[in-house]
Amino acid sequence: MNDDWLTRNLPESFFTEAGRHSAEKFKSLFKEIPDEYKPLAYAIIVLSAETAPEMKRCQEFRQILFLTYKSLLEENKIDLKLPHYWYADGVMINPEWIVRITNGIIGWICDDSVEECLMEGECRYFKRGEKI
Figure 1: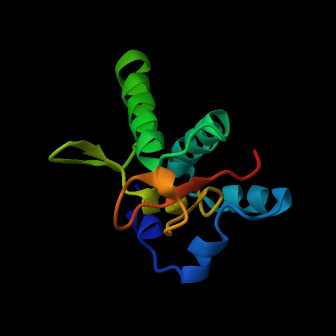
Figure 2: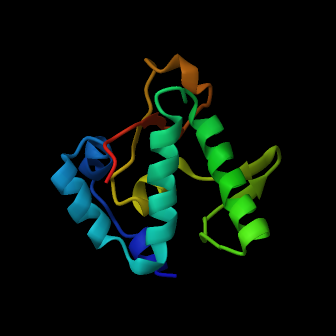
Figure 3: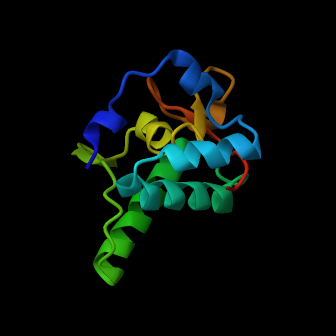
């Protein structure tokens, strides 16, 4: 895996502009994603398009993402290489990883105006963009 790409230094504008690009920009952003991350990025984009606008909590989205990953791995032997780790209450997918893996196609914001999020700290509320 190209961990250098995933952990690269990005300006704050990368995150504030994420999910707000034109369809043409989405296409170019997707092309920039390293090949090893493209299946996961595509799965996140499709899953987000399928769950929005009903999905209001990023915690629920991340849980659905993990269950999709687990199901594909166990039933179809397809490893999307989702970066995740375990914490006291279960699996944790860092919301920032979703923005990074999709190269800003999917964006999250986190502020006091989003009561549905129900998470503290670094949670970023899902903001759906256009399909690629």
